[in-house]
Length: 416
View 1 (cartoon, rainbow, N blue to C red):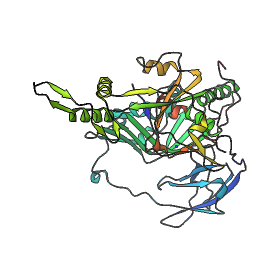
View 2 (cartoon, rainbow, N blue to C red):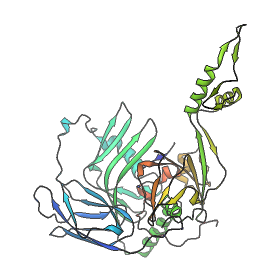
View 3 (cartoon, rainbow, N blue to C red):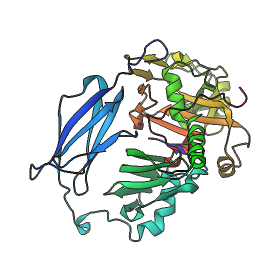
View 4 (cartoon, rainbow, N blue to C red):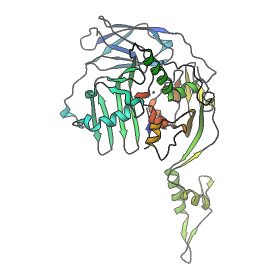
């Protein structure tokens, strides 16, 4: 099975301020102009959040350094999302929530699937939560809010939820409330993409043994993850942290078709009926020989060329400002994390291509050939601009997701 996943101080020579500020605001209803009490206010993909009081007021006393999506939600209203920078917080933020407009299912051109959860529930859990050992300890508390649409023509399955999903993750010790915005799987390309706004709450337990297990599992989820990679990239410490990055060139079918077209253009019949191939055609300033054509035509439909040279972080990224690094590379990148071996569940799901006890191997590429912005906490944007496959395509799901304010313990990786 092939796993593709989308979805969000610089490089050692710039530093990010650790100062924290407060964010104050008020939430009112768009129709009545009255304050909304008990609205959820949180920074997406963190454990930083609060609720509004009876006057619709809220305070986030310690707004962490960096760029975050602020999410305000309440049942019966459309979620409000805005991006805020810690260095440019407003003195008082006014949030207006608009009531949701109920649209009759009958007037929707593409209706929801009947008995959608029975048909697509396992598929949704496998791709949204994952199939790792952690996933077996996760439970979606409100599956009834998830609805599905399947486009048979385009072979795309989508999931929707009008209320936040509530996921209990007993492997990592979090209750995650997730504002789902997009969930789509394309059977034609095998590309899966989901986007949303999670809020992490620590589960409570009075047992030190359980707390220690959560700490160990969180550390295990972190090391070798995309968050770990992006944080290491930001500090320009990829190699020191155990990541080996190499350039990966993929020769596509388009190149093979180009060769076919040129090859056919050079064929002419000889006087005795034989086919003669001219070796003198010059196109676009470059001479293509018949031997090159034959070589390319013998190649498989897609060919990977790995450049066996480990790249340092500052060869693929650069400083944008004191809070942001830019990640850019023209081809694909192969990323190996050498201090961990692939989990058994991953090897079992890919028996033909993944060897047990091998290091973690992933691939990434930029879909729009433009830089991705990376922050010190490991977040990056825009999520659609980067797709991961291999180990990360399998691993980076809700069962293994950590909040961006997570701080890992000091650790000497195995084998180092």
